[in-house]
Amino acid sequence: MATMSWEQRLQQFVEAKGSSSSAGAAGGAGPSGAVSAASEADVEQMTVQCIADWHTPTAAAAAASTYQHIPRFYRKCPDENDAVRMRVREEARARHVQRLSKEMLTNSDLDVVWALLQRQYSSQENEEKMINFDDFVRVGQEAGEKFSSYFTSPMVYAKLYQQDPRGRLPISRLYAYIMRKVWLQQTRIGLSLYDSHGTGVLLEVDFENYILELIPTLPQLNGLEDSFYSFFVCSAVRKFFFFLDPLRTGKVKVQDIMSCKFLDELLQLRDDKLTADQQRCNWFSAPHALRVYGQYLALDLDHNGMLSKQELMGYGTGTLSPVFVDRVFDECLTYEGEMDYKGYLDFVLAMENRKEPQALHFFVRLLDVQNLGYIDMFSVYYFFKDIQRMLEAHGQPMVQFEDVKDEIFDMVKPVDSLKITLEDLLRCGQGDTVISLLIDLKGFWLYENREQLAADPSQLDAEDEDDDEVDDMELASSVPSGGHVGNQGDGAGGHVGNHGDGGGDSQDVLPVEREFREMSVEDLE
Image 1 (cartoon, rainbow, N blue to C red):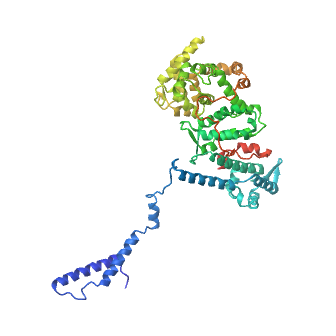
Image 2 (cartoon, rainbow, N blue to C red; image 1 turned 90 degrees about the vertical axis):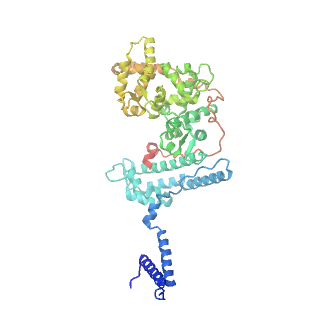
Image 3 (tube, helix red, strand yellow; image 1 turned 135 degrees about the vertical axis):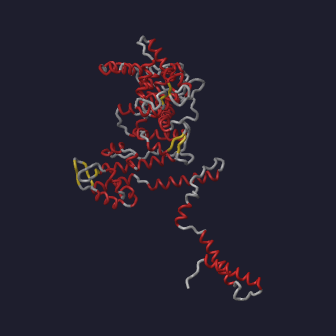
């Protein structure tokens, strides 16, 4: 006889109980019609088992339930007054960093890898030693488990492969890749030491401390006077924060610092053989930092360490429009109506990088005089009428507003024909030209005479020579002893603990140094 289901057993029990009740009422109840205690116990046991089965989810039900009950994935940082939790958090972070440090390759490990690559190469072409994939795997096996992440994945080989007809890879490129990965790990750990809250972001004062302790490790900065350190730190930090924190939150992600090119540019100063041209193009080099600060001192006519509107009017060729300078002081942080060095650095970074999205964001905020979130016809007229006054003062032929307005809107081709947004300027690729037309008489003149200048470039060369008349180093030599960086709060000169430079050990492997520098973070992911 087949085993009855719970439903069948329950139905039988109910029917038997009903029959027993009817028979009892008629006076003919007997043992055969009564519901036995054993039968009732069986039904009760089966009912309890069914209920238990209902509460035991199947695999599908368990998977679906995860969408209804999301596990906790965020824990708020403990309050600074909670000394015990803060101490536990700091200790956990320190041990995590210590463990990562032990897992990193050392200089001796890198020497071992280089020796293996030198021994295992299978061919040579144009004095470049090459390995194939079999050699690549063999090196990984001989190197050991510590190097497994660099040699076990075919993706590493595929990323570095450069269309060699025989499927080979230069050993110098592979070694440069390993060096670059190790350097990034070292730098990541070094930056995390300054992450005071352990949240993956650095506050401005945290990054200032990092740069300050990095200075002694950069040979190109050996000639800097101690009194200039705070100015250099301010200059370096402002570039990172201007581009990585355009919304001015006062913090940047460590991951963003690692991903941008600025850290490479900064650590390029480890090379004591940089040419004068390379130093001139490097924002973080001593000559460039001294030049920017020298210009600041030259503009500060009353020598009070701050810049007034009239003093900022002398920036560059002295052709900025007064209305634009007024807007700079309206929107940027000032102290009793004057600009400090930190604000000046933001201004310089915007002026020198007008094509960049962060700079265009800076300028749109200034040109949006009505705080509408875009540049309208009134804003264009508001700034161009000042350019017209300057043209008239210099005896230049007048240009009609309608012509300039049509030219600007034709260049930008905004989605809305009556307003220009930041997205419109970024999309059109002519945002820097539009900005120059509205804020700078020289920029307007260069645009108006672009065809003539293209036919006779000597006129433009003469203009550039006039701009470079002031000797940068002579200006920089006037850096005062024990100077300060205007009114900028904590500053970069505070005392910090000995966290190390975080930049990693440099390797004197000349054949791979160029490839090492050219590799981006995206190449290493």
